[in-house]
Image 1 (cartoon, rainbow, N blue to C red):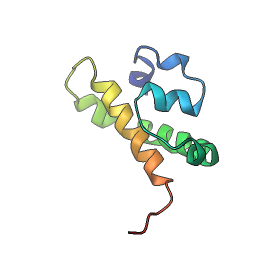
Image 2 (image 1 turned 60 degrees about the horizontal axis):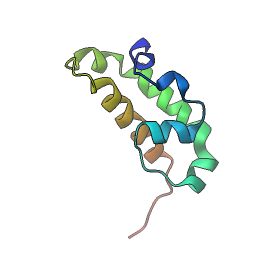
Image 3 (image 1 turned 45 degrees about the vertical axis):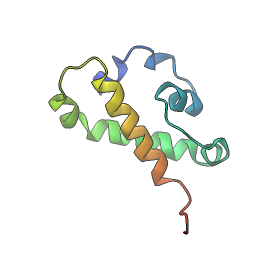
Image 4 (image 1 turned 90 degrees about the vertical axis):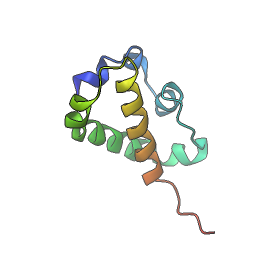
Length: 85
């Protein structure tokens, strides 16, 4: 997971909101307030599980940021209330 900590600026993130703002992931503050710990826990697990995927990424400068953004988005979406049409 050290690839994640090598993303410039990630070591300054200290709140759930700061992660969402840093990775430009849209979120509802009311929803996040109620599920921020489970979302961040799942995000951490996804980061650890995707080390092999990270190792296969091309070495583009934004590749780690884009992967982390996708994993944070997936973690958040997992806790969104189900929407009925």
